[in-house]
Image (cartoon, rainbow, N blue to C red; front, side, top):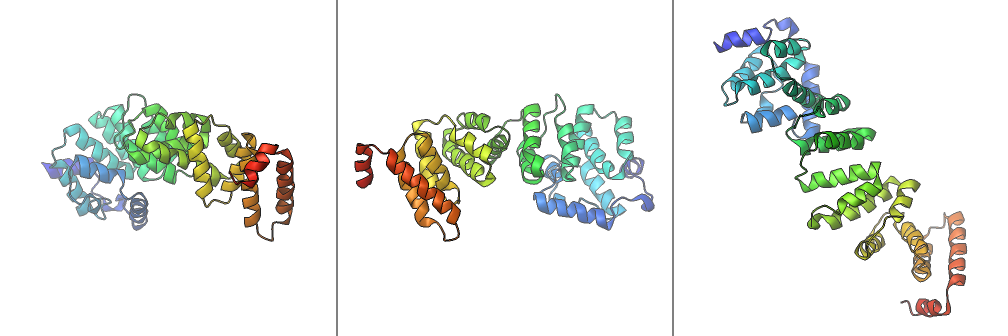
Length: 314
């Protein structure tokens, strides 16, 4: 009977019931941050339980029995049901591994559930180790990538790339592709640039401007120099120039100035330098003097034809 199976799987001793107020609060907070826990996705999309977040975490033994019954009565196959119970038992500590061994749950299933449990607990180093297990093809890969990048801190990009390179999931959502590109930018700008060119045509403009904005936001000399050295096509050069001209970022015009100087376009560089000068505040005395010196140098470097072009504002 169902109650016998429940008693065999979970302890009925209330003194070791793991869902304390603090644990329930932690799980609830993680759900609010993620929007949905991975256990919610399993219960909703695979077990097809309505209002899944109301079942987990259970706040009492009767709540746990109800959740067990909901899973037991679902259309899931026995192995899937056992995997759900294994997830729940991980809240109980060592009972999870004992259960998995007794039910002979395959290693790949265990690592999948271990990974999602770690994701729900924000234990991302453990999560990526489990989810990168060979021959494992995790569900919800888009959410995994987004979670690593949004909540993984300074290691978020590395975690996402490690998962993608190991599991090689299909990137199906536009937002996931964008997150992947930006994760690559943080690690290897040149690789990100080459990858964005292989993306669907309707995404490329937005991806390229996102790469530019990412580098500006990083405010890193290394990122900026790599950005300026990218082998841009004429179309990409136009997007680059146009985007920087309308960008509100404080480094946009400075970047555009350096780019035009590097490209040997003193007329455009002089126009940009003058524009920066006119926007400068009275508190930038040192920078103003440097810009004035730069403008003088640019003016001296102009050929006769370029002087005419400058005067005509061509």
